[in-house]
Length: 178
Image (cartoon, rainbow, N blue to C red; front, side, top):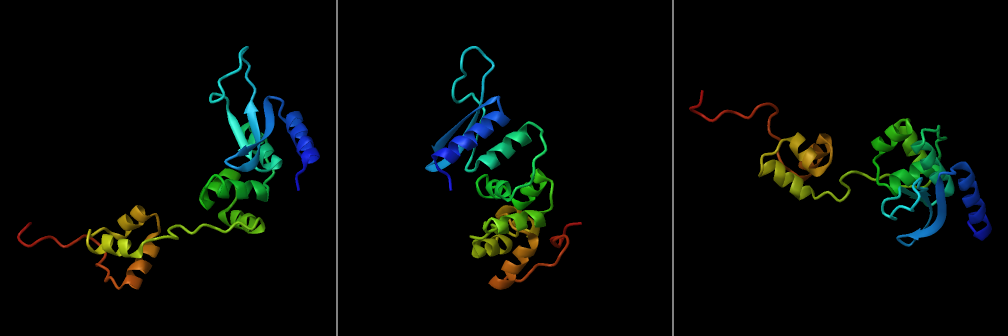
């Protein structure tokens, strides 16, 4: 639990580790966060919107973000993975690439933090998928791209909706054309 003394200690540790930044504790969209603002090397202070900012709910996550930006090695922490996935809305694949681990490792970290994995197309309108395939004559691939799901999932939706699948390959040529 964070209290005034803990916050002061956390901010002091951040200031020691990253002297090029100013640190504050602020509410961002109603959520208490640690905020880092790059110090300006110019004689006059920059406009607030021009200064690079970083914010995180946890000081350790903020420290990892700043270390990664500075090119320092970062210890993989479950909280940093969860923050990237949950707060920044990164995908499993994007998190795996960012942290240099497999998707399975990311899933384990998310489970340890109690973060539910988002399922692409959770709120999928299956009737719209079926209509696009049947009425607009889109391919499985085109439907998958349009709705942000896999071709396999499109096929499963078509089966559930009772839409017959077209043969694979090129569509038949109209009669009378060479």
